[in-house]
Amino acid sequence: MPSLLSVNVGMSWNVAWQGRTVRAGVWKYPVHGPRMVRRLNVDDGDGQGDLAGHGGEHRAVFVYQMDSYRYWRRQLGRDDFTHGQFGENFTVDGLSDQEVCIGDRFRIGQALFEVTQPRVTCYRVGIRMNEPKMAALLVAHGRPGFYFRVLQEGEVESGDEIVRIAASPEHMSVFEINALLYMPGHPRDQLERALRIPALSPGWRASFESLLEQEQSGGALTGNAGLAGVSGPAPAWQGFRPLRVSRKVHENGNVISLTLEPIDGRALAEALPGQFVVLRLRPSANAPALFRSYSLSSEPSSESYRLSIKREAHGVAGAYIDEKLQVGDILDVSAARGVAEGSLVAPWSPQRP
Image (cartoon, rainbow, N blue to C red; front, side):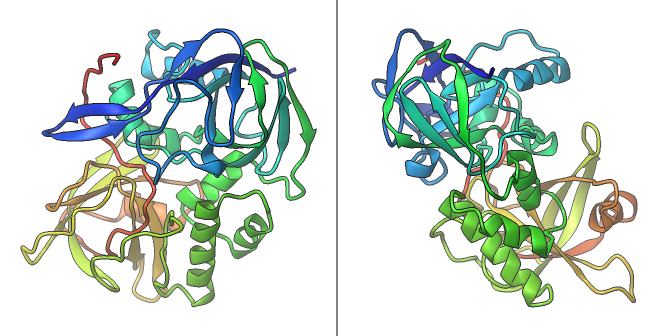
């Protein structure tokens, strides 16, 4: 039986980082005894640093699993993790991203919850973890965790059993939904299937609707590709702009990072943390162009964009980027778009507030 191992809370506070002040609510710490869970968060001491990317009715409670804790201990060679390390409100035993589906409902203690979306990995988790690639690693390794919506308020406490009381009719797991957005290829039938899930949060619904519009228009760049918010700033330019590959790095496993710089000397529009760009790729002269959405994986900059791309076993775009794309090549790149969090930061040693 899955169980709640720890309830974690923490308020947002200002962090001095790279010459700027960042508002962060990722420092969560265990609390003991029963806690009331409300519609928007856990009572008494919990808050979010950026409500554009976190919090709200559909992202009231973030859940992360002990199995992923064990996985990251092995991957990162660390033994210093404590409950709340990944910014989660609930640390749980069980409920893997591969098994839990968007729309599943669970009872914990006196409260009733519904799964609404995977976690959009915020660059602030890199600050908390003191690991500059953490946001990209969480996406690339398919271990995002997920958010609950609170259907019935009530008290919860560490040690409570977690009981699934209703299953999503579409049975699309957190892992599948996450991969459908972040990984190369966005099959139309899977986008349509995801959009049939009533519990899917508005931000993810807008993203999939945008990708479906792009697919239906034959790959033309329309709408907000990537993770769209309910609203967001207009792209800095329409269509595509040529950028040069100035650096190509093979990260851990099958993740490739590209640094892209303007070829005309004009500064780029500084992207918001977590925004996405669309690449128009031409693997061969006779093949149609491929359009792929990728997350920016660096701190905001007007000098360059950095993308981290996972190569899939049968992915045409990933294979082209991995095997053929060279430093100095020119790519067609859209302006950054979307409002959700997701980029990386330089290492920083946090102090508990």
